Image 1 (cartoon, rainbow over the protein chains, first blue to last red):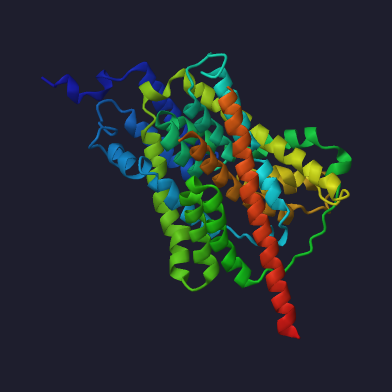
Image 2: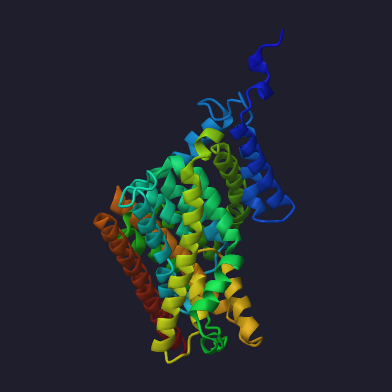
Amino acid sequence: MISQELLGFLNITWQGLIMLSIGGLLLYLGIARNVEPVLLLPIGVGILLTNIPLSGMLDAGGLFGVLKKAGIETELFPLLVFIGIGAMIDFGSLLARPYTVLLGAAAQFGIFGTFMLAYMIGDGWLRILPLNIAQAAAIGVIGSADGPTSIYVSSILAPELLSPIAVAAYSYMALVPIIQPPIMRLLTTREERLIRMPIVEKEISQRMKILFPIIVIIVVGLIAPKATALIGCLMLGNLLKESGVVPGLSIAAENALVNIVTILLGLTVGGMMIANQFLQPQTIIVFTMGIIAFALDTGAGVIFGKIICYLSGKKINPLIGAAGISAFPMSARVVQKVGLEEDPENHLLMHAAGANTAGQIASVVAGGAILALLL
Amino acid sequence: MLNALYIAIIGMLIVFAALGAVLLVMIGLGRLFSEKNKNGND
């Protein structure tokens, strides 16, 4: 007689079936629709594996139990990914246009605005859902539009929400071309969108490109110490590239390191999406708040762009403020596209890229600030 | 709720302070190296 314990399908629940369907959906989006396949493919497989009954994948000795303990609870995986991201970033556009750093700062308002909103509907005031201040903050950090920062902060503040937060952050990053343009058009006039920004490339010396990551580590670390790990790893990756003396390490960071860790991170995030933990009312709140966070980021960036536009005597196109969101390089391309729709001769990409890379730094600082203020 | 408002305001101030410091660093580096380039060419 076959023991019931050997037959997984006798133990499947309707919640498990829903999660297997969600896993299948993410795989479809990643493979057939090419929506962030680098993340959605491993996440989708992780969901399938962990929701097979009796598989034991998330048990202490199971694959996902081990990976979760080694890479998520230690915050190691997001930090290693950041080394690779740093090796891919070129801060040249930012260094050529220092004022764009403030657009990156302004666009982080979405984090704090969403945090307040989440706390307001939770334990802070309305008590519609049981969301404490740490959970509200972790949800707000979806507005960093940065997967590793979202995972890093939520693994510390609200590990029980890590999976939906990670999936929301990466999904909405892929949806930036849909989320941002309507908000950009709503908050700007046609006259503002038509402001031309000529491309005058300032030569940035290699010495400056080398000193920048070193000084940023020290400056940002001293102001927001809890951001040191994130900013340190990001700038380490950048320094590996810009120093020019360790091409092997730079290539490894940009390729092997980031790809290997992405596989493990995606699998583990998906592996943590087990039915009884993921199918909760809080998951719907996370996804709803996530889109609000991205919208607030875009709005704040564009409004600050308008302020800079008027202060500069209408020389700066406020659309580039939308690129202050950390979704790199997608957001800069969206700004370029919206600008070209109004004027096919107005190329905003390099200006937006400056704001976009500034947003990467700003989102890390914001994550560190949230941790410092709550721990 | 006031606690959350405090966190939000101070958080944004920290972000602007840090990025403002980065801005000063960039301006400083830009001037330092453009002056050195000028002196080097003299």
